[in-house]
Amino acid sequence: CAVCLGRNLHRTINCAASQTWDKQFNTFSEHICKGLWTKDGKQLCTAWQREEGCTTPRHDTHHFCSGCGATMHGAQKCPRAQK
Image (cartoon, rainbow, N blue to C red; front, top):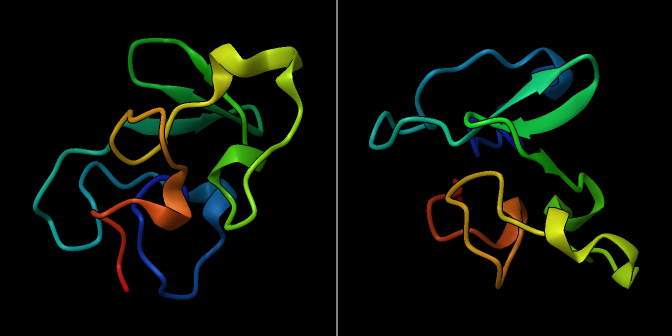
């Protein structure tokens, strides 16, 4: 899940978790109207959060990890994500 970083079955579009799957961190992002946004209002690229990432350079400013805010990886490769 791009919000809680958990791998448990749930509809990620509806995930309203306030903490990561292991309750170690506050969540960094949230879903708003089917979009993925940081808690401080920046839109995130949902493709970047997937294992394969996003290859379009048109919106590089949206390429942040939805789990921790890093620019080097998306949610699926986040060190905070459930393995």
